[in-house]
Length: 137
View (spheres, rainbow, N blue to C red):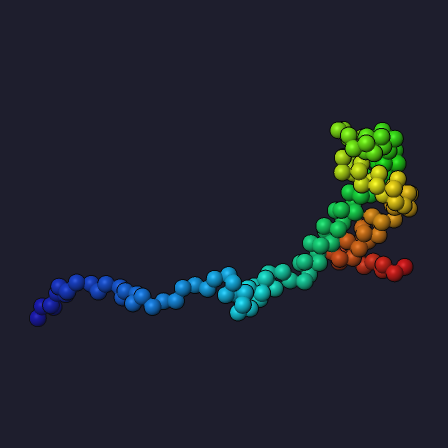
């Protein structure tokens, strides 16, 4: 007996009846608490502390370079910084370093201002967890 050949057309995919809900907006996700959970899952406390420590470490290294450079090149920059016409800074921190070091060294604390970036350097290292630092000593 011969097999009967299938002559029917293949079935088409079922069409969407049109009652699929729209995706939630960003505000609706925030109200439901879904957005906060996603951010919390992405920003783990260890990662955030490490990145904050790295940021603080970079700023403190920049301040140390600028303040030490101001000890040697402060005379060349001082008149231009005080007049506000600094075009080329002799400070290794550039224009921003010249202005910051002039503010800290000449206007605020003097040579003791070097302790500020050293302390922030230790805070950055402690945040990163690279070395155990006791800040109270």
